[in-house]
Image (cartoon, rainbow, N blue to C red):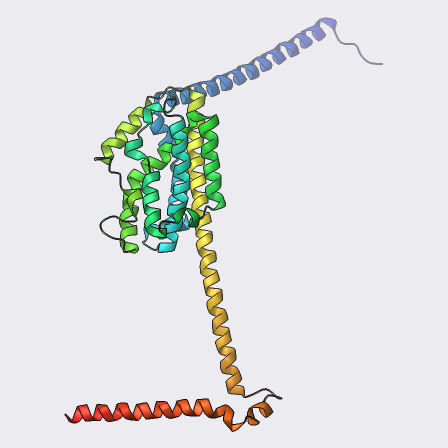
Length: 335
């Protein structure tokens, strides 16, 4: 038989347990609220920092890693070392033509749109006409029918057209990554290409790297950044622009990788042809060393004397000419 406890004591114990539980729940709730408040404060500080920073500064930070990836592709590393062939340079120039044609078509479409108009500098920056000049120099007057457009380049082109038609506020990301990059690192690549390919010092084949409308690259880049920073956009749009800038670099990397693959395949095909020729030569030499195959010896020994006549006459003519040349040489020496 269970012993019943004192009702007063039982009530006291129950009340204590309830008070303790409430206290623990209050502590847990307070801790959670504190953590949430901390996270909200960090997010608020991040958003505040992003709002206070200029778009150009945010873009530089956001694309730092992918920018380094682009510079360290095998194609670009070789280029920077001066290890670039004329064939490779022509392929790059062709791809750039398709990219800039698409970019500048969409820029013209949005030149009066407030999301792009402040950074519209066609006379200073646009590259399509310069690339046409270079391609005519490298390929001749029929260059349009000869230049290739790899799949990766076509993908880049399609993205540019999509942005220009559907999300023009993102167009500045592509313009920034291309034009300011050309004004900076492009000038170094110009000197490398001119030296490695022995191009004329008068600039033929290098019009793409020549910005006649920009007298001072440093000052112009400062002007461009200030105009870009003045573009009106909310925080959400800024983030989309930053993501698009990273995408622009990735598309550029894919173009370089595709060009490197094209060049490698071309080298392999050339090497295969050379190896086949070497194998044919070895097989011929081997057959001469081993002598005629069984069944062919009788054909060789059964040749008629008349079959050998053309060769015999040729040998006689060679001997006669050699003798004549020797005689003339001795005569001149005696003089």
